[in-house]
Amino acid sequence: MHDLKISIITVAYNAQATIEQSIKSVISQDYNNVEYIIIDGNSSDNTVSIAQKYREYISVLVSEPDKGIYDAMNKGIALATGDIVGILNADDFFAGNHILTVVSDAFKNNNTDIVYGDLNYIKPDGTIRRKWVSGEYEKGKFNFGWMPPHPTFYCRRELFERFGNYSLDFGTAADYELMLRYLHLNHLSVFYVKQVLVQMSIGGVSNSSIKNRLKALLFDMKAMYNNRIIFPPVTLVLKPLRKLRQFF
Image 1: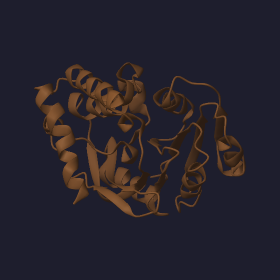
Image 2: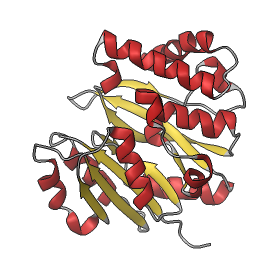
Image 3: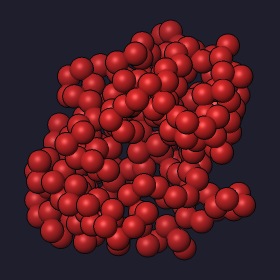
């Protein structure tokens, strides 16, 4: 079997503080068959000039206005030619140089549609704030507030053609909704890699204010109803409760 081609999509907007670490973590991978796509939302800082320093390693570099992070991801998916697609945000970085080899092996050895793993939340000083240990997926687990960390979520590119891209109708919950649609609603095959794949810098859009948090909850609820979660109000309560153990 040939080496699977992995398309890594990094979406960025005014990410000059973090994008270099993200890029370096991609280009230092020991896996050779990688297509690296950077979609920038017309940044007004030095994001693009930092990316240009590594242009020889970047297959596609686009900088233009977009409708937000998930629109940018969809642009990247449309440009991707790999067998497998993964998203690495501009403030995330791989947990080691062998992560894409691990991901490729998981697909090849398990004949699966989707692979996911564990994630650490990293404070600005480099120490770990939270550990997101995903655990094995079982049918119905989303009903109890479970979800895998989206930055560790890899899937076969053809799934986007068959089951759709990120829907902009779900705001900040577009990644959650896509994973619900693929795993909970359509029962696609999935394999859990029991190791940390991605380190995530702390500070996301959806957690920035009470108003944004409430909007995020409404988007979560809409995603649950759309994808046949049994009793969304209960799942909405359980979802944040599951995060508590990540601190211990």
